[in-house]
Image (cartoon, rainbow, N blue to C red; front, side):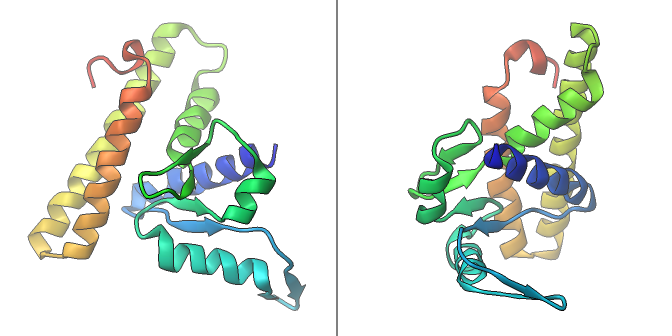
Length: 166
């Protein structure tokens, strides 16, 4: 249940951030935290920050080895090419969008919503890549191209009947 909640929270943030041209990157770790008067610190926060700042590298949310052991397997957790486990917020965002906009609706409505969501994310990616290429922002360009490739891999995993015409 915790992975589902983590994925849905990340999906909600992603769905809003992408519309502003922002990508999502982070780290998930388990460990003690101290909260008091708006201040948070502790080994869990340090590990999550280290995972994000030193190892995530791209717009993804990676999971520490300790957290992975506690979380177990889940459809939203995958192993990446570099061996890190990551939270699949793209799949969660798609699932969340489909359940929010098409619950109880006919298949044609679900197909249209799926195609529209995919087209919107593709448009944002194309716009960001074009803008970053024009300004020669190579770091940003590299991140958006990586994300666009990851997004296309995700689209390939969606049943073809839900993506035809996108």
